Image (tube, chains in turn cyan, purple):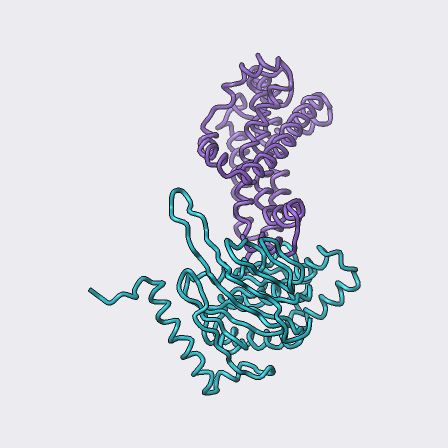
Length: 270
Length: 250
């Protein structure tokens, strides 16, 4: 598949959670249409509870859509994780009983990749993520940022063609997030994967993405797709540019209204 | 050893020394208790003479059977209950009150059902240990982060591989705690049952010596039980610490 072609398509994607114990069903998402181009960096922002993580779950095949269709490389995804997708979750998903090295090699060993190849890919990922000095460390011995790097490395070694990131830097401080963003951009350029980043941080979305999808309050729909127009070899220094402020301002103008709706404060005071 | 560890050992040594002094000084009469130093000598005599070896072997064998059964059944039942939340909701309150039930009260029933012999004792040891194992297994599986299970799905691991390579290692420290508790409970159950109603075993020998005012057998055997359980628990505690240490967030 060549760069610039449609990589992932969502058509009328809807997700409704059935009501539990007599409660009403929850319409979490959609209908939602989107086309991700091969090799692009796409961010999704939206108010809390708008269905961002649900979108990631249906894209990854971790949950089924109630209506509509998702295609990855032309093949439908429906509640089954397809080959070629990597996910980094918001929560720490490193295996606490394994060393950094074994965590990163875990997926490769699951796929019965030959030992020499495992070694090569793990070494490369360790260098890429700056984890060379922590090969034998257990996740508990690392900081939150480093554990998240382990999870990113563990995803990258599988060489996924589509990388889904669910607020991967959510638990990190602002400086570390900017630096991790730089690393992510570098990895994205190096791997040429398509990336979809879910985030609640407008600056993160504005800095990292080629396009940003702004979601409405639940049920989540795209209100606007904002094109950033950044060059591919960008890094965190673009936050100093005037366009950066304009983009985040535009995102916030949508999100302020939607966040108030999500909080139930969209009505004028009595 | 940590400071707390040294304090713990010092307290035990001081208590033993105090009992030794009280016994040697005649404040505690020999009719009530023999000095710990004599217990050690008598225990060495019992062990080297081989007179009570069959009783010790029998007890350890019964504890072993009760323990193995409780670990296996407890783990399987714990895993099943974790997979069947509705059934779990029904039986959960029973676990909370389980240890309020005097299991020994059912011994006559077990004799009627299974006859005199090892089986009722094994059942008592098993019944005391199995619930600790079930509860610990459930506790371990409950604590598996959802992100790890999602990761297993992303790796397209099947149910068996997820259970063996993600769920069990993740729950291992809690399952290990269950094993530790099961050992303690099976010893309590088996020796207690032998004490009350058996014709052989360490519990029976302790009861027999007690009924005959034979302190030179009763106390050394009590000491043997204490030493055995302490050694096993120290060994398990060591491994438990290693398991937890790897996961403790800095």
